[in-house]
Every structure is written in structure tokens, then in C-alpha cells.
Length: 575
Image 1 (cartoon, rainbow, N blue to C red):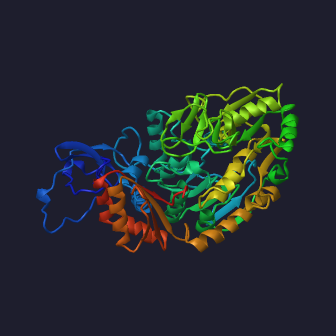
Image 2: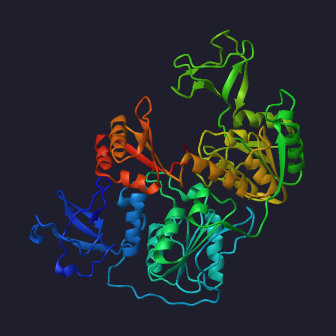
Image 3: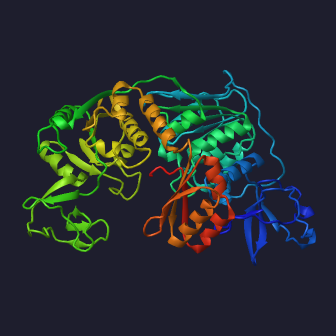
């Protein structure tokens, strides 16, 4: 039995009294543990008792609490705990209903047959970013559809209901009572489960097909440790169930190409793309090129325009106009950021007035302006046009409406909050994304462009400002062929031994815990890079993902958590 206690990662043996014979693998029960009554999941209903223990010495299960995930999903949760080096209870919690579900014996399975061709094997379908995707469903059994875009998932669920399908939506948009009801319906089978990444754990007993949309979208990966990815869980679940797998995406990732297949071309195409080579721009114009000014004036005459710059605040790097020295912190020497009330150090948060430490000048030039400064510049460039800034902190709630302005300037958060159609999406400094010091920089930059392309109307334009017009990401978007990026990225990762061609994990937390976990993994043959000077971060590399996960499953790694806070990020996106 696996206790539902965050600090306990191991399972315990209990005896099951004769009055609770209806309990099966996955059933949620209540048991005594260290003087408390805690709930947990049955992992094995026929576990062998060690020779040194007698059945009479075991504590008994107190009561049955609720129906839980079926045995195949429990096994999938245990695999995910190994794959992402996390506690199995985290995945069992995600696979269970939020409220109690009666445990009155087995559920009578539903049976339904719909017209259509049967799905077989694995298929990777590459579509245009604005294409209307028609989801193929299995004619018999259940289909799980994983969609990271809630609005599109809601539209898809409504369409399938209109077609006569029995649709289950166990997403977080519902209250717990509704989610429990949907979960209970899913375990009867013969349905279509539509939702975000949590839909992959749906308790359907007759899984026939799994469909994953936008497999490269970061919303499919949990930001909290364990950082599991719904695409990889879907691939493994389809393999175990012998179900068909279809992955639909506008920009295939290397992970999908290796795990699924080479892509087939689907419907849709990329919008018109205009590339502005900033090397040809006159000095002093900064981010506001002549081509951008013309495109904005043309766009706002008919539709809204969106400008993207992933730098918040007024300026992230400044230079004195008098002595040309960079503005630095007087306490730690780091560069300072410009805020409305003065300079603030990004490292130690020391604040000071807008004064140069070298010549005591008070005028500065923004070397790397933020969206607040660019908003002022755009307002000056377009004097009769409303210009507003948008970032993740603009509104108190994610669902708050964006400002009613003809031109929006913001971080990539603006792409998630503005509604289509838009006449122009301009990336003011694409090189910041292309040259990011991350192994997945090209893949992530391409997906940033995918989000912008989806906002455009039929005559909309995608404008890219860059000093790297020959970069593979720019070429892929210009020619409408995302495989250019995937092929180049696959060669790089294979040469470096990065996932999926090798195992990679990041350790972070307290220095003692990181050091102990790194030492335990090193004893299993894993290469440890680091830790950093302060001991709070280290990188683990192995010849394969399986070898890395085996090393992270060693008792020494879990024991390191007793030394302090420890976070393990397998297949990190930001390294």
C-alpha cells in the first residue's frame, strides 16, 4: 500500500480483512501509520510476505475509502515515478478522482460502435499552425484526446457531443464534484476523453486510441517536480494497451520523431512571413525598424497588431550617455534594471537613484529596452494609435481581458491572452530566442512563432526582426517546413548525447542534498557535472534515459532528501 503522504515515498505491507474483499489494485483505503490514520492506494493485492514477518504481525486496512485508478493505470503511475524520479503518490493522485467514488464491485462496461475506419499503429501528422484539426477517433472502445489549449479542447468536446459521441471532460475547469462524476463515467469505457495533460490518466478500461495535439507545447509538461510530460506518458500508455497513437502537431519535436515516427504532411500552411535583417538598419533606430513602422501602420488600419519582446520592465541593460559605462550595482557589481522609481539590482535587489557611479551623469541609453520602454517608443512612433503593454503580471488573474488597444507590446504571455484574428504579429528581437543558452533553444523559438502564427487572420503577416536571417528557425518559417529545425536539432542532440539520445537531469536545492544525490548517482556510473560554486545545482548525464532513471531510483538518491530540499528535473527544458 502506498500512503498518500508527501514525505513518504515507499510502500508498506498491510493485511486485508475478510470484510473488505471488494478491494482491488488501485482502490483507495485508510490505514494506520505511525499513530495516524492516512489514506493510500493498494499497489498489489497479492504481495508476498517476507519470511521474517507473519501475517498476524501486519496492521489491517481500516476501511475502503474510494474507487481508484485501475490496475493498468497504477502500473503506468509506477513507471512514470521511475521515468521522472518522483514519488508514485504524485501520479496516483493525478489518476484518482478528487472526491469519493463508491467501491460497489466492478463497473458494468459500456459498449458502443460508431462508423469509421479503425486506427492502427503510430502516426505523426504535421499540419499548418492555423489548420482546423479533425481528430480521428476509434470506432470501438475509448479514445483519449490530449489538447493543451483549453478553448480548443472545449470546442472539440462540443463538436463530438453534437456528433453523438459520449464525451468525458475531467479537466480542472470543473469543480471537484463534476470532475469526480466525469472520472466515474470514464471508468465505464466506450467514451471519448478530452482534456489537458491530466486526461492521459483517465481510467478507461477499453482504450483503443490516443490522440495528442501540439505535442511540443510546454503546457503538456508539469512545471513542478516531477516534471512529467503527457506526450511521453501517452506514448507509453498506448504501447502497453496496444492502442493506436496519433500525434498531430505543426512543429514536430525530436522527441516525437524518435518515439512515434517520421511525419506525414497534413492540411494547412504557414502565413506570410516577412524577415527584417537588422544588420541593414540605420544606427540609432534600435528595435523600431522602418519595416516594422510600415507594417504597424498598415495593420492597425484594419486589425489589431501584436509585438513580442521577452523582456519585462523598462530596461535590462543601460549605459551612461556621458561616459558610456554600463550601469552597475554599487553593492555587488551586477548590472541594474530601470524601474519607474530608479535603478534596481536584479541580483541583490539594491535600489538607488538614476545616477552614474563613474561620472555622476543622470542620462542613460537603454542597451536592452524592456516592454515598458518600447511601449513609450511605439506610442511616439504611432501618435494617434492606442498602445498598451501586456505581460504575465499585467492582470491579477490569468483570465482578465487584455487592454483595448490597437497595438499590444508584451512578453510571450500576450500570445496566450489576445484573441484571434490579428493583422500583424511582430517579434522585435528574435535573436534573443535563437541564441538562448539552452539545448532546446531552436525548438522553443519555433514554437513561439507557432503561437504567433495562430493568431493571424487570412491576410495577416508574421514579421521577424533578426540579425540571423539564415538561421534554421527563420528558414523553416519562411519556407513553411518545420522539419528543417527538427533535422538540425536531431543531429545536434545525437552528437551531444542529449535527450532522447541520452539521459539528462538537473539537481537543485540545498547543497547537502544535491551533493548526496549526485554522489549516489555517480556510484551507479552516471556522469555528474558540478555542483555549482554554491553547491545548489548539478547536472547528471547518462548514456541512455533508462540508465539515468535506474540511477535516480537508487535508495541513496531518495535518502538525500533527508538532508534538505531536493528537486530532480529529468529532461530539463531550460538547460
